[in-house]
Length: 357
Ligand code: NDP
Ligand code: ZN
Image 1 (spheres, rainbow, N blue to C red):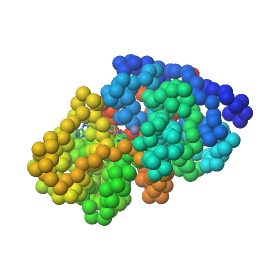
Image 2 (cartoon, protein in one colour; image 1 turned 90 degrees about the horizontal axis):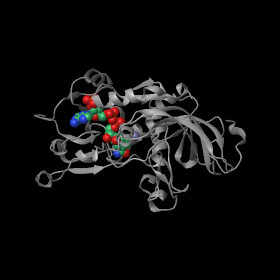
Image 3 (cartoon, rainbow, N blue to C red; image 1 turned 90 degrees about the vertical axis):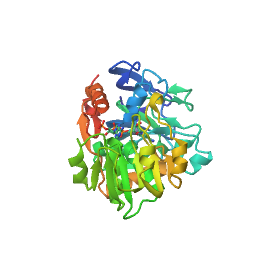
Image 4 (cartoon, rainbow, N blue to C red; image 1 turned 45 degrees about the vertical axis):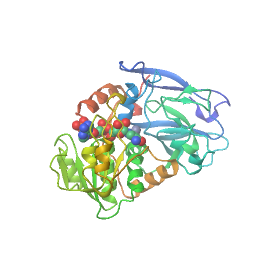
């Protein structure tokens, strides 16, 4: 499509991979996106990361999904068109999009740049877009996206786009709680769930000067952890002597949070970002919590747009990148399989140039 002269009001043709029901495989899918508004940009997607949230969503593990669904909220690409009132971008710039594409811009949450908590926040996919007739949003496993410029981050021209993509969710989701908890030099930080998010949490915590530990289900990635500078990888919570200032849980399956709360120092914090399926969503035993008083537990949801740009700038400045494996667009099912069976290492990133209609 000639993006230079998009007629006002014309819907944008798009093409990608969609899943038609929670039990099916991905298939090629043609669709259209809403017309470019005056504050919107159109991005040609070059890379899209696969987050475990994509799997939870595609399989309706949290709530019943909207199908056909085009997941993907770790998006990096090139700006190909800009609306008349766009000020942050020009055609040819690189841009990134994470989990949100719009919000009201007026409520307290938006004013504090915590757009993820806006009542009208529009998530990148599997969401009804209340600013566009409640049409479903389609994500990054596709060739383009139309987004309000406020929800796109500026990516410098020399940045590795394949590494930038996963920062837009895995990066911000782990950077944000580390900042919220004020991690400082010498703190003992543990990360449980050593996958796409976990490895980012480890890298940021190390960059912030913490002594970092990993909890995993097995020792498969022990070498990788130690090479990064992790002090120790544990494959169980039993009999651990260490006590931690902060534990970040990225676990996407059933587990008992008390096992980790028990390992906190007095005043220590458990930050929960992993979101297991609703049927196995863990409860916290409040009796045990009270008898372990003085430990704090909080949840954390991605991060606002201001913090997302800060995270990206920080990551590029410190050369903190995700551990990625590039795949073709027709390998999404295989990637999902590996991510659920424990075969995957860290982050799969789809090279969108391999998308063919
Ligand atoms: P990955 O699949 O990349 O990584 C998950 C890791 O957790 C894997 O290494 C897996 O190990 C490990 N794991 C699984 N079960 C356990 C367990 N019981 N104990 C210890 N480790 C375990 O997923 P992501 O990193 O992409 O996402 C993680 C979670 O975070 C998901 O639930 C996702 O939806 C959520 N999320 C939340 C966000 C938020 O804003 N709060 C944003 C983004 C994601 P193995 O290698 O053995 O399989
Ligand atoms: Zn994600």
